[in-house]
Image (cartoon, rainbow, N blue to C red; front, side, top):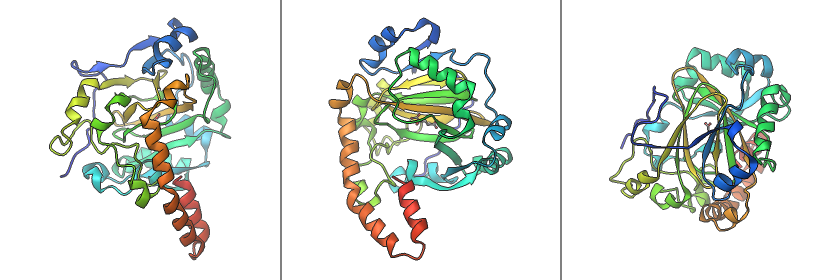
Length: 327
Ligand SMILES: O=C(O)CCC(=O)C(=O)O
């Protein structure tokens, strides 16, 4: 069955939807944030993180990145019209060869990125001028004051045209998604709803490696097929939603399902950072986490066979790079 993705034009949650609670950064302390959010793993939006800093628009980003190359995810215009059960890849499994930033910026400006749903996803800002720039330094300092001090990697940029959807999935680590330009709508479900969200089975890793991932849902939460996925209706009671504005950060605890939509027509840009789960008890007793580990173990035969095939192929170097990119 064909399913259309939505392209919201509003920037406010609907009346009957639970909103993620919002707090000005100034009103929070490390202790209050730990007690009310980190300890139990409860999402929150932290506002007012970036007053008076540079606009992260395309001109500014072109100045900062120039022709530095980043991998692009080319989802294609039909992906979200398809039944997800027919997908062969998703997330980092879609990543293609790197391209200069200025070329991608031109695609965003001309509408090509929107037309063909081409997205710059989870690109590390390590070794870029932005890493040392004032905005990220200020964000890092603000987050540190709230107890975010054990990062599990660098800041990553997520940038693309309005209308783009990063579909429903969860992560192993705690995350903070920080909005820098334009607005993103985020829909969330707690880990308790995993079964009602019909994740891809762990076994998909046996024949798709890391191209398809058991931490993605088969349901379109904004346009669900309730005949195929009837239990999704029960998950709706637990749905939360927020519209992230520039200077706001969303705390996404490990295991929380989230779907992120870039709102409107223009370029939309955020950075995120992953953090080690603290307190660790939240990670130890987690089915969501165990599923990911089992799925990752199931990729081993696939990756080994792919590597052996690559070694005997004429485009050995390219093939090996492609395998490494999808890990
Ligand atoms: O901003 C996006 O498009 C997706 C971000 C995301 O999935 C995350 O921060 O975990």
